[in-house]
Image 1 (tube, rainbow over the protein chains, first blue to last red):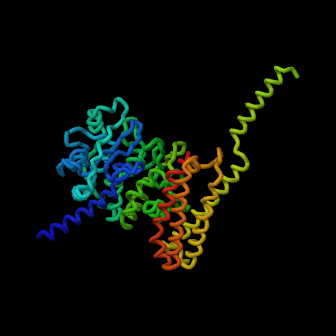
Image 2: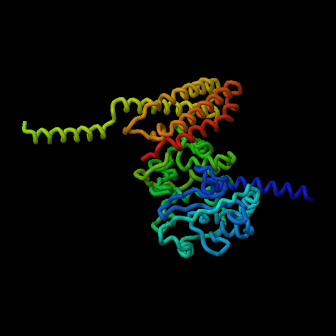
Length: 282
Length: 153
């Protein structure tokens, strides 16, 4: 009985480690530039609303999430609410993680419980004055937050749905690749069509299959190569924010999952949206 | 010529010359920039060719070793390609390359050892073995670009 349980826990943790990578937690919650401890937070994330410092999500009881119950974790991901009832800033993409299935959230929790703890104290966010009050987040959610688990599209293949789930619920590509309104909500008419003023002031490319302004000229296998290794069709290797997304995340995915993402992305409605003129990452 | 006029003309042309010099790249710098871009493009061309073979997109397995050899050789040309500190011009090379030369040179060395491993694997084990060493090459490219190459504008 004990051996069976151990094996189950191990399996759950492995699944959780995979979810961590697919969901891109490492790039924000680890201060790699300053050799910060794994998932101990502290990486500066500059946005038009100020600088955010993602928290310590190791299981340290005082400075991390060690005092949480699993349902606190589920609520944080699915509803953007912290254990004390206040709402998170949507820079934490619970707006996408809300689509994650409960099993994946449980697995992630089990994995985080096994990560070495760090006593790193959280850095307070440094925000514009009108964003300093959490009530702003509650109001923002009332207007713009649409919670709920991913619903598969019966008309589409299993692999397409897997790709859609990975993109919408975990890798949260739209959070950077969709432009935002002045309120910081996603402009859904331009879904995945690139943002001139994206994270850290860089522009993000249009990843819809528009031939002129998007990735319509890419082949499926070029897209798969890029997502799994960061290699562009001309042999160049990107060095900007996507290097972190791929290096800390997507490169750990199975080949089937990367293919599924590519399959889904290539079926996005092509939108002509030219983001040149914004500062683009290397 | 009256002294006043002469003074004005001297100062004026000094300003004009400085302005013109600041706007243009020296011929030497332009050549240096073009050269290093050629070397880096060569790296890119060779690795994308090698990857195409490894992934079976083309069937020319016997050409993997020549391409990997080429990449290992062009990697050796990288240090000199960035030897000359240039100013201005159409380049994404950041001044940190020369200001933090120690780290830059280390990253170039990491790249060279990754391409050497890649070549050794291609020679002894063909596309499959080389495939296992591909990640390290890509990581070396990325590590340097992340720190020393400017964002596109």
